Length: 187
Ligand SMILES: Cc1cc2nc3c(=O)[nH]c(=O)nc-3n(C[C@H](O)[C@H](O)[C@H](O)COP(=O)(O)O)c2cc1C
Image 1: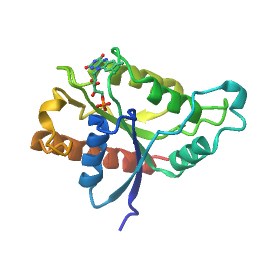
Image 2 (image 1 turned 90 degrees about the horizontal axis):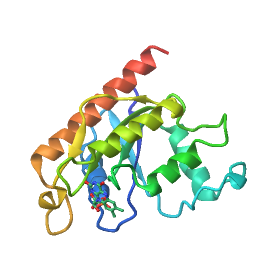
Image 3 (image 1 turned 90 degrees about the vertical axis):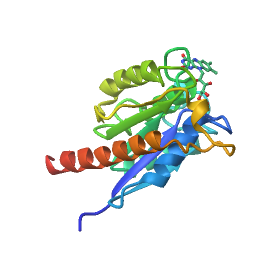
């Protein structure tokens, strides 16, 4: 049997009751049998300072090492002011530096996001895709998982029980695994 595909995932929200963290939990519960998913918390990553890029903080070293060890990346993004949150961009910036030491280089990546509005992070996700160009990542195009009106889709404990959303997340993971295997086979 092929080795399991190692997926490393993180959400761009630090909020305790974050819907996007809840969406990442759905992914943890939906990982296909031929893959594994580790979730990482961006809490504790300080604001990026280029003076420190050659001696990054421990949390950033850990983040970069986990990205490098993964076969594929899963990013869960909220939408802030029609773009991705600073917390997420900041973490991505750290992991991409110093120049020539970009941990994301050539990694397959999938994204998803949940918002309280009607477009379900669509605008943020297209901004994120733009950064993948300079990061030299290999994004999965479809399915697109944009969860609108997410406040109506959580239960009293803040978990996303909506079956349509859960099915989409599972489908995204299945496609990410297939995409990652395909890329590995062409190396
Ligand atoms: C600074 C800020 C900007 C926001 N901008 C948008 C936006 O552009 N589009 C949108 O759909 N929701 C926007 N929202 C609402 C978010 O969808 C909502 O706060 C959501 O809960 C954030 O994700 P989280 O629950 O994972 O923290 C914004 C929220 C904040 C705090």
